[in-house]
Length: 129
Image (cartoon, rainbow, N blue to C red; front, side):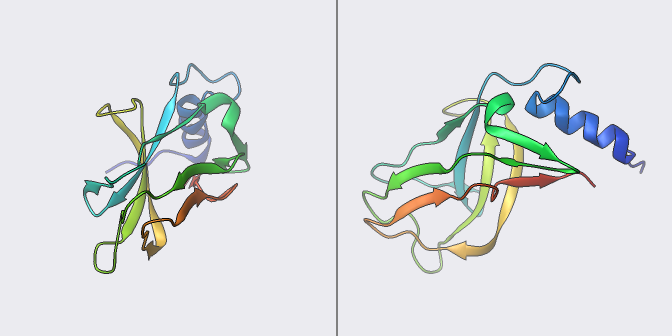
């Protein structure tokens, strides 16, 4: 299997996020939370909108979010022990849509009723390899 060079990989990530002059981007990204292969559901849960070319920055070989991504407070239990949130996924639509990128959390996260759910600035990062 072949592997992209670093230069080519940077062009691909620039294209996906619409950074620089390397090509068009998606019109919008919708950040979803996942428990294994199942999207989170529960009172108050919705994918969060970000804009590829204005909400992300490429620094060296890492692209990351420039702003806090705020899902608000869970209105019910979204993910309890044994059923924790394990990944972020970026889609091109608010429901269904095409999967663009995925990132596993460093540690699974429990979200109980009333818990605030955010992704810190710089925490949704993707590295060119």
